[in-house]
Image (cartoon, rainbow, N blue to C red):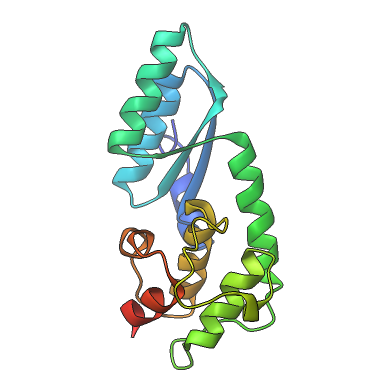
Length: 171
């Protein structure tokens, strides 16, 4: 279990962590319960579907469906690796977005860097998701913006497809 009989919750809180990647055996028992418990403590659980095992395909499917609908973001190992690589890229970003300097150009530059494009190649009306922005990368940007003190909501931003709408939403 995630938090019972350990000081894991305290360690996460002490280090300012609010996300947990879950993999292991017995997806419908320990992994699912860990995800639900993490969710109850405002920790964002990521249940790695191809890195959890179970007694049967039906048990595995039930655990993944239940978690996805109620308490966890279900994800693949490849997506986890991409997200971790993206986090490294974000850490290397030349121009972090700060709450007092958020501009269309700063957002454009950050999005372009994530998509491995030139900022000038992105227009205000480009559909960012068709250009390769995915929920993992968007979530990484949201976390960085929150660290900079900007109040943003992942779900609200996920509904936006264009740079200009993301900026308008945040002003």
